[in-house]
Amino acid sequence: MHRPRRFGVLAGSLVACLAPFGCAFLGSLGLAGSPAPSDPSLAAIELAKREPEFYRQAQTERIQVLQREVARLRRDLDEAESAMVAIESGLRGAQTRADAVSALAEARISVERARTTTPWRGAEIAEVTDKLEEAERQFQAGNPGSAVFFASRAQRIADWLSEEGRRVAGTKEARIVTAPRVNLRAGPSTTDAVLAVLSETTLVLPQRSKGEWVLVRTLDGVAGWVHASLLEVR
Image: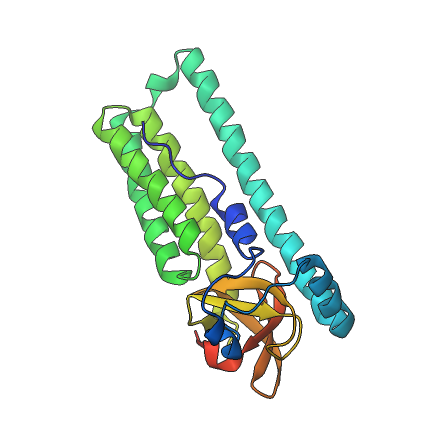
């Protein structure tokens, strides 16, 4: 049976910690390709010393994002346990095709809304799409209970994404990364250490500028400097 991708949000935050690879000549604009620090945590300490208040704010946001994701995963686990109990007790058949049709319709609306409001969350959109497609397959196979299960999971993640989209909607200064792999640096120059690599369409919130560089933080709480030419207004 098709197995949907799990824990996409947490996996997405880990991607930002990967060391950069790519063409070295792009380093002059802060694109991936410049040498990464031997220890990214040391580069983070360097940024924290330079921008203590901003770094603290970014870390607070990161903790809040992870707390929301942990809460969602706990709800998924509770639902999965309830589904297992229902299967073992023979109650799974209590959900009808009408229940599945309703759950699928609501999930489709939620997923489409998330797709529209949070285009920067590519990995998470792929995750909810997988779950919705699995719900469709279970429905076509005549398993309404399983269809409701996967549809409700897809809707829960999609609603979580849409909530983030609503929070960002009122943030006029939000910017989008426009290159496939962009270095996030500890300072406003290509000689500063690389903290992380941002992927294309990553949404960032600028704090201030210095020359052609912008101090930003991502919605996951990763902070650093990016060359202004690699950002555009959302």
